[in-house]
Length: 102
Image (cartoon, rainbow, N blue to C red; front, side, top):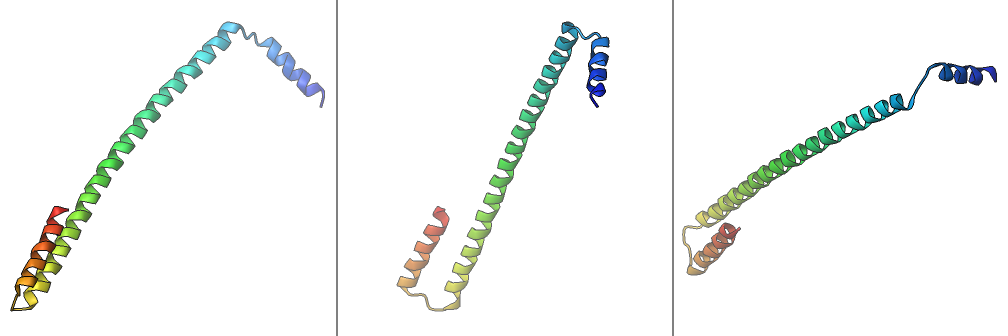
């Protein structure tokens, strides 16, 4: 087993790695790391923009659904009774005001 490390050392010594070879490998690695960094940054930025757009659209749809449902319930509740008192009328106006101010 001790001969195996010696063989590896001899093989490494036979291959004439110079400093310029190591520098070339180092610069290639740095170049690819920078390239991957920019690709990742762009991908994350695009993901965040898409997620924000989706969230805004989803929130607007939910708010529209909630408003429509509330308006339907308010109209149904007040159309069931044929006689509307001034108090009911004021309450309905206040409810519509609250609903539409959102």
